[in-house]
Image 1: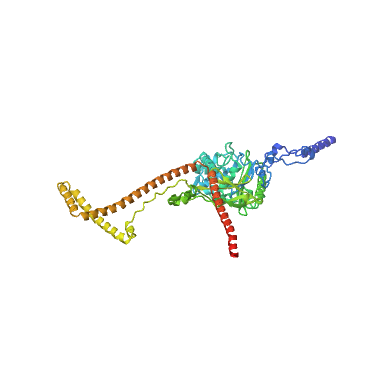
Image 2: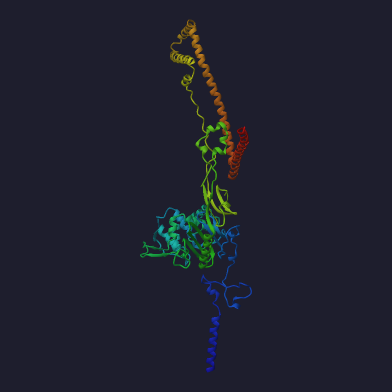
Length: 588
């Protein structure tokens, strides 16, 4: 009996030893999101042989970081996230890029776009009455704040629940109020994404719960966050660490909402100095996602990470990327628009002689306008002179460093067409002409003008009277004609003088009329040529790209500069030749 008890004791001791030596079953440990596996790092010794565990490093850790391939670009950290970027919010430059356009599931960072669309809807002061669909159309176990069917919250208050507690029931209520339905709100989200220039984003819901057609990329999430940061309301809500929701029509107690982003909480393990907001996310398909933004030394950076295995890893990698971007880059200004070109310069109006008389204010308007300088982000080891500029194909300018975009700006364009003014006719002041003539001739002209005026008035009155009474006094026509003939015969000298005066007056008038008619014809022909030339120039301009026009303008400017330089050199040579001659004369 005693031997049997000893044998049982030995068996129990062996079992305890074996249980202590056997590791926990991986399938059980995998339920914890912080679980890490081990793998053979060297290919020589296994963890079982060495007795040591090595942290599992996923394949994504070794994927290429595109920004590290740029010539002269500081080398960024290697990270496990499948996709990530760091963007300067002011210049739009991507300082760190790993698979920036790779399609990934966003999880709850979707709510940044939800908040952006809600804020820009203009319904911040509206009320949300939560429907049954908004409250219950969710996956079991997903995050919520216990909204009741029929409960009423203001839009502004709901946004705190959305961004701090990542409440999916609140997201549904916002969507139905702003978009009329969840699908209608998704259409608004996609329209906004297209407006911002997103290239690989499509939303199907306002919360980010798993859907194969609900995806984004790191680049697009940075653009969405950049747009959201332009709204002070978004900054205030997303940067709030805790919020007290007062009683509502359905809940008779206050609710306390806390921000789950550790990077803005000063007492948290992963607090980052300068971070003033962001959004966390997690689903089993998306794994951990994180958007953070921080400000230091006047620069604001946005960091995006997608598909990271573990929130601790996401926080630590975001720290590393932000530190890298703040420490290695600088913002500098470069010229944006060195010269301005007006319509008159473009079509050569200054070189068309008499056509310069057609100049209007519209001729002096610049065709292309924009900021005088642009801020770009480049490595601290680089010079601003290394930044290159080119058109982006849509009317703007892109600034690049060794082929990598570091800034951009938009330009505004005036129409190439304009109205050509019609030259006005200048009336002739004959009184001034008379006053400027010689005294002798002046008296004769004045007399002729007076007589012509008196005769004209008398003749006009008589003719008018004659034609008014002609039907009744037709028989007097012969008598009046005979009277006129008799008067001329009796006053032949006076009639000759009057006829001569009328002739002298008529000839200049006819000459002036002929000259003005000829000039008018020339002006009409000239205007026709100008119109045809303008139409030809406009067609030529419309058929040319902006880059070619800019090249022609630069060539013309360079030509003028060379001509001026040559003129200066010739003048200098003439001065040098004249100087020895003057010296010889002084010696004599």
